[in-house]
Amino acid sequence: MSQRTEKAYFVGTAKVGERGQVVIPKTAREEFSIQPGDTLMVIGSPKKGITFVKAEKLEEITEVLGFLQRDEAL
Image (cartoon, rainbow, N blue to C red; front, side):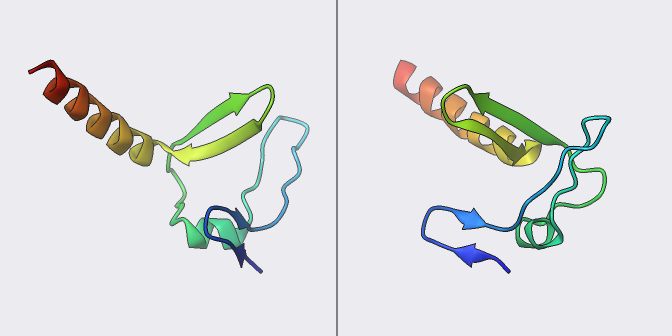
């Protein structure tokens, strides 16, 4: 039961197990194409909390930012 808004999605809840493992809700895995073996980056802010980002998405963003920075240096 995902509740979509323009900027955010509520896709469920997850509990942290004894070993620190988190199970991502099926709805979120389907919505964001998260497959077994995918690498997720955990990004955190003491004020805003934590979020998971697929590593490949972060790599895409980094590549674009790097391209823009190189372009500005010209």
